[in-house]
Image 1 (spheres, rainbow, N blue to C red):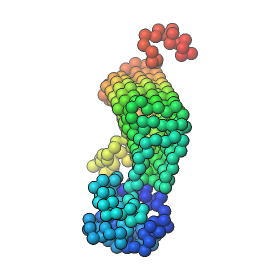
Image 2: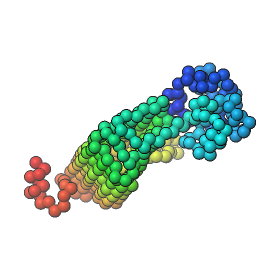
Image 3: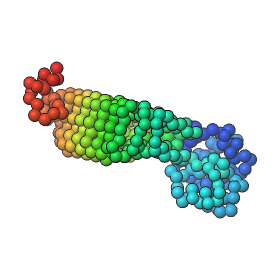
Image 4: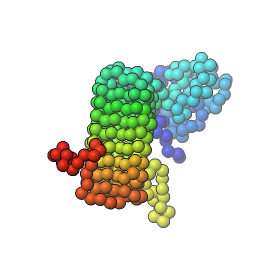
Length: 334
């Protein structure tokens, strides 16, 4: 049996069965096709809803006399048009498991019938929030601002906290079955891409980011970034492998480990085009050289560079301003 798709599991966890039975109203129940049938049919049967068959594009079944359930991923515009052309209504004649809504303006509070909730401390402009699935939670703090455009895509059971005074230019965020916290007082440049699919992400206050930032947090992994970090252009951070990698001798998935993570300390400078790979720890007040690939454990107050990066200077520190003398730096630092 194939693994149940997340969006189907998300629907199973939050669907109101009694409400679904009211919508069915005694009609025969069909699935749209065989997509995820091996999981949906027994789930429905255990709750007293029996599947008679599949629609499989048979036009004669689209007359309102049956009730059907669609388990496609996302919203297929061609399919939805066909249903609307037949005068069929969602939640009256059919259920689309991939519930999808776009919220383009929130001023205070939003909640829908799928348990999705958005709380904002003030009006939020230039942001599209795409809600797919159930039980998504988004908080946007006071002073949030986007100069160009931001898309936040939440794909079920995602909790996101964007703290106060976060500013950005343009980018995309994807979240699914995960917890993500941005503590605030930060700036994100243009064309960033931040995703968290099944992991944990904690980003401290005061992060400054140039363009092209990429974060990929994978299932069952954790990313932690400390306070006051500086991120140069085109930096990439990956908290996991992303795909399965097998050791054929040991007969195991190398990526299936406990405590897969990336931890970056306070006041760390990630240089131009650097990459931080999973199972890496970088100590506070350290610097990663341009174009470096960091994987491993690195101490505080050092400079690392290379592929794979190694320590090239110890007992080091840095500040964001250029041409600051050591005496001025120490005076300010103390």
